[in-house]
Length: 304
Image (cartoon, one colour):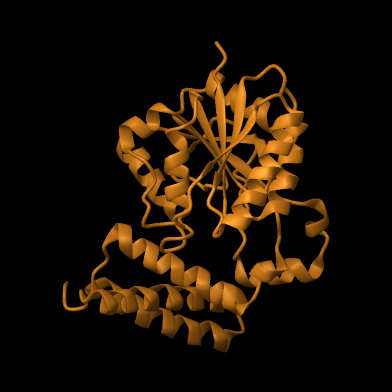
């Protein structure tokens, strides 16, 4: 029996990136025989941009027989927009894509086949680098230093069990939301900024459900040079610190030693000339410093 698939694309209104993704989805293998819908969770920051997204959806919907649509959520927050959209979709399988990825031609068939052939409740698809970006030495050097763009490849063995999820390319049985609830709206873009997928995966595993790997359900991620710099590095790790504090509730007793350790290891790796080690330590420093600031701001700094 074939599962119907709802593809949710959360977007803050990056119209040209959505167009690129739509064009890829318009050409996937099996699009005529697999029952699916493509729904933009339209979280554009203003009505002018939201209208442009809506017009793009209509353009592709007219070309593709009422398969594209949108759900408008004006209040900022990726998780809020996704949660609102989930309730308005029809598929037994719900797939999630970021608006800046490009699906490979076999993506849709691979998602459908995974849930037909494996007992897992959630699927993680591969997130790959575009071939042109792989050849760009400057981008590769910056990526090695900052690691601020996500790529994911756990190998060629489909069906292997995983312990986490990356939200740019994942899919779930609808029943998972009945078991574990929706996405935590404190997290992700528009909230604390990151880790909504990691927190959700923790609840999936805690409920005794399984996450599986499907390398053929692959997308290309954009190696955006504007995300490969000192400011982007700091902002990402600060967001990670605030997000993890929100769902883990770390105490001052654990934060302070980790903050001090990050300073010490940063100095040590700097003396050794180990750039990767230095930036790992620097990232942890921003992470725990943001936790400390959030504790102070919320008035919980005295709580252990």
